[in-house]
Length: 389
Image (cartoon, rainbow, N blue to C red; front, side, top):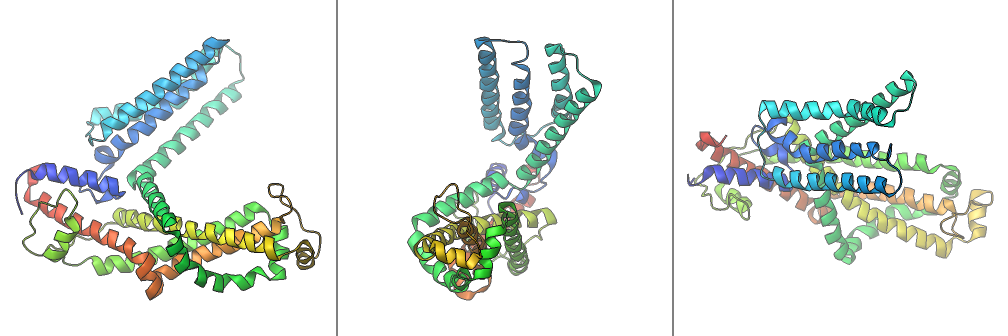
């Protein structure tokens, strides 16, 4: 492999991993070196935005809104500036890391105390402690969510999944033409079941949401099982031709692969990152199919199911949706349930059935294989250049 600018190549490859939503593929991936710098924009946004609580306390009239506007403008400007700064993947020193974490940890205590000082109101100690506790819980929850989302590149994965879903919608005739016939064959007869209409007329929306979430959990579990099989198949020595093809269009495109490269086994965090990548794409893809199924069943119900038929199936006068006059709530819930079930069936079938796998699931696996191949070349390049770490 060439030795010209190896450090620049590895750094550009690390940014390539970030853009792909697979940051854990970066060698030596850690909290201080890689996660905290990318968390900084979100943490700074929350810290500065929390100061908005102090603005209306002692200011009246238009001046209050001017100060609030200044706080919002400063918060957005700081978020944009820090976001541009962290794109270069800065490395924070130990002192900088401690300062950032200490400043963030101090904010949930400082803001309520400043509010009390500026307001000048006499409050009960219990209420004061409750306010501080609420801020602590909020800031801790934000930190945990930001840490997990940043560690596994969740925001990038969602953007990529939505972008792919938009592409699928552009080709909706082809995609739905392949998926819907099989799904309708599985679910259509359930639509005319009286017992299901009785249940949907009584079931609360939050319970139905839990059922749909259960379908999503089954999809994720199925994706996890399939991903283990795929990783076991891919984790082998990569041929030069395969590596060259995978590196095309990446920062490693100019690297000459002279011989086979041995794959390096993934750790648990890297496997979870790939699982999240696969699950996110599968769930969004299934959601597109689910929306089409929902629209189909609602339209079918409006055309076929008359109020008399709905009342006969339910055994009582059906509840009518306040948002869609004349449409029974049971019809909407029935369509939601069947759409959720059909989406789960589509996602699982796309991973197991040969024809569906080729059409819907294989492209996702190809992306994972390419990521692992680029990672193998990237690690080999770093080993040949000890100073690049």
